[in-house]
Image (tube, rainbow, N blue to C red; front, side, top):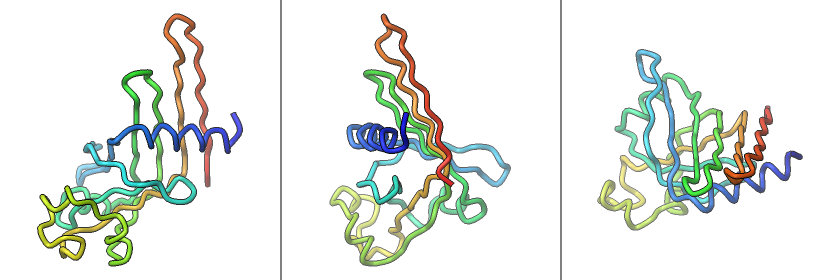
Length: 147
């Protein structure tokens, strides 16, 4: 599968799924997974999430920015695993750009709440799996190192 074909399939999979799983590594080195709401994708498959500066995931990322993001479609079992580095973003312009009203539950100060921040995941490796219809058992697995 060509790199552009993979990118299109990954973008389509992310756009049709509201949630992703973000995996960080805790102080003991053990993986820690959380469900996150997908925000609109950035250029070059940059993945964005909203979170709070006071959360354990931010503490994990400050110590080790290496993360994984897993997104799957339970209807057809298509999934993507993305490894990359997380960047903590507090730029006011971007916080306003990505703000959604439901975030107000966690950040009552709105898009300028001091705890509200964004995570930008820059992919290094993308692994896409499309198991195909079960009765055909056709499988497509593609791994592309982006850096």
